[in-house]
Image 1 (cartoon, rainbow, N blue to C red):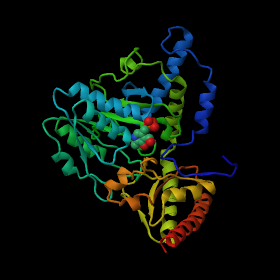
Image 2 (cartoon, helix red, strand yellow):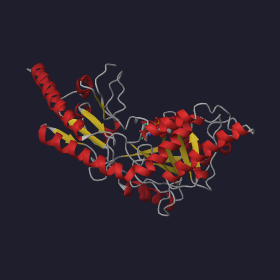
Image 3 (cartoon, rainbow, N blue to C red):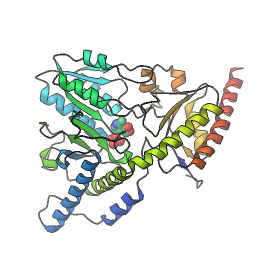
Image 4 (cartoon, rainbow, N blue to C red):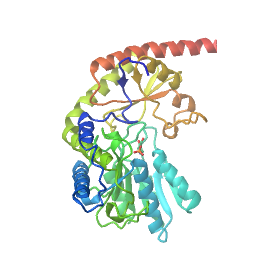
Amino acid sequence: MNNIKTIYLDNAATTKMEPDVIHRMKECFDVYYNPSSIYAGGEYAKNLISESRDHVARLINSDPEEIFFTSGGTEADNWAIISTYLSLKDRGNHVITSKVEHHAVLGTCKFMEKYLGADVTYLDVDKYGMIDLNKLEESVTERTILISIMSVNNEIGNIYPIKEMSAIAHKHNVLFHTDAVQATGHIPLDMNDELCNVDMMSVSAHKLGGPKGVGCLYIRSGLEMIPYIHGGMQERGLRASTENVLGIIGFGEAARIAKENMESRNKYIIGLRDYLQDRIIKSIPNVVVNGNIINRSVNNLSITFKGIRAESLLILLSDNGIYISTGSACNSSSNEASHVLRAIGLSDEDSSATIRFSLSHENTKEEIDYVIDVLIRSVEQLRRFSNEDND
Ligand SMILES: Cc1ncc(COP(=O)(O)O)c(C=O)c1O
């Protein structure tokens, strides 16, 4: 890596750790005791975990006892879906999800279809990426045991109506899980809201200013859950393995900071995101904003720059110190188009001309102005090359 100043606009991929998170983790770096040990050192580590659990619970307004630490969002998704399926499969084998979920959910569903006999409905979305709630309800059958729909989409930023969807699930005696990895710390989530019937919710620390390799599954109190990782009695016997004490401490601190600052940071980020969007639309021809621009996470902007290849644009941006990604889980070896962009009806060509900007409170207007300048030049250059190629 060279030494030019970088502008980071890829916060949906991961966030920079908050300085206070790093500080807190450094303070606790030498807490090596096993939290299961009964001597004072073990008790100390256990208390640190418990403090973090309180912070995470406060962020989503749940009871601390409803928080179960995991190795991240992927594990939480796998746990919620597979364990629910295994415990309820005698009642039914039908699971409903959507075509725009993260691979952590889609891959789990595919696994269950292939190896566990699950029957999975993948709901379509409209051209804005939204799910038709009537279709969701119509797809519930007598054998449906679980609906799993994300809270916020990682590529196009859509916010999904989890209250309404969880109400449909409960009306039919079906459990509701949401992958809230892109939502937690960014939009308010209230597990104590009586209109919010979420049974399980996946969270990841590294999307909200915390460290990687740690997250949690929220499990509504009273829900009988079976373990997914087997071994010791950690996490009240539901998630074995010696706790990632330092990671959990960082997660707790990140949750505390997110709770305190969410409102003011969101106001700031939305202004910056809308400024970026307006300037791109005004200064670059042939661009399309993807997703639902009304119900969208404040930091997300997915844009198709018609006629270019996103990978080439990302390289030019990176050469100028700007870090952005396509947002698609594009498999470079197969060059497969993003399943989310395909689901909203984009052609493969438009999909591969799409990039995702995801901002944070650390970005400034000066940075955005610089990004626009580089974008204008780069898009123009790439379109010129592609026209010359076609001549
Ligand atoms: C919506 C969504 N779900 C799940 C994950 C996986 O989370 P983790 O990286 O903590 O396993 C991600 C990460 O990109 C995500 O965006």
